[in-house]
Length: 155
Ligand code: GTA
Image (cartoon, rainbow, N blue to C red):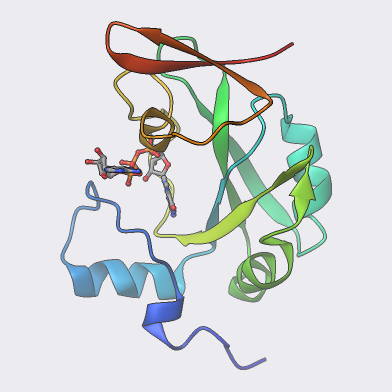
């Protein structure tokens, strides 16, 4: 099947500042990659739930849950590694925007998983984006400790 993702501008709006290469190498990695990033997940979504949804796009090689680097608990993102590029593109095309645990998830091409990328990079341990969040999320209780937004999801 011909790729629908030849236009680089449609590949991903995200640029990983820690990618070890230039912009061209980053774009080439995105075009060839069989890894997707999933964002806007509930902190309570399990690896089994991710498997059940993402296996609809194709056979999964590995799932890596994103974890808060301090608490070592899920913090709202994960990586899914497929065997084939076609399945990777199908995950972005058909699964992005669907609801998982009451949240519309975002599926993005990723340049490839490396050890260390499973940890949130925010100063409070979770994701950077959560520290800038101003909108109210009924599933999340905001506590402000030491000037940085610390997020705790309600039981
Ligand atoms: N493929 O969209 C993504 C994506 N995101 C958002 C994170 N990852 C992603 N991968 C893909 N697509 O491995 C990956 C990261 C890492 C892991 C955790 O998830 O590569 P993180 O979310 O904690 O940290 O990553 P990241 O990605 O470094 O943060 P982000 O959002 O890009 O922030 C970059 C810079 O912008 C920072 O300097 C931050 O201070 C600033 N920033 C971010 N959001 C805002 C905002 N709302 N307002 C102002 N500045 C902001």
